[in-house]
Image (tube, rainbow, N blue to C red; front, side, top):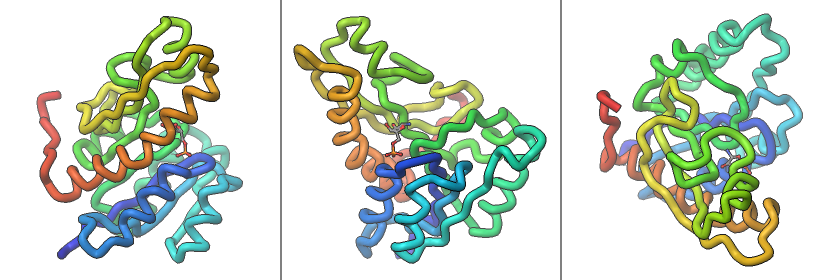
Length: 198
Ligand code: GRF
């Protein structure tokens, strides 16, 4: 089978990226991870990628005068790696509309909430403050609106009595990994398509 070429963007730990790398080793998985790119040179995930024979690259956003210059370097790198899809996984840079438009329908992100609830940061704290009984994670296409693009797949977890942001985050992270593997499979195999109107 022809696998879709996927670049994963990270900023830190990279546990979701690791889940994608492991899943993509299966011969029948419709995507291969062709590059791991971090905007932070010290991201722990880069070492994992290198250890696993995947081209790993740091593009330090601090080395560029503005977002556009950083994104131009990122775009060039994605072209160099001949990426067909981009999977943001704990990638902590806000992308400009110019960039998201170029990759519309081809760029995914994982967000730790049941979107459209709790866009942005501190989602676990927000769920606890709201006394939500369910929380979870979503994989969505990246659009101009932060955490606002078409949802591809979601996974829910219960909020338990006595949860802290940390215990809740850990429960959510456990479902993030299989969720991202499934969502990337759906997109790479063409089973889920981007609706241009959304
Ligand atoms: C995950 O919770 C993800 O949903 C959020 O940032 C965290 C990244 O974790 N966007 P990791 O780097 O994949 O371990």
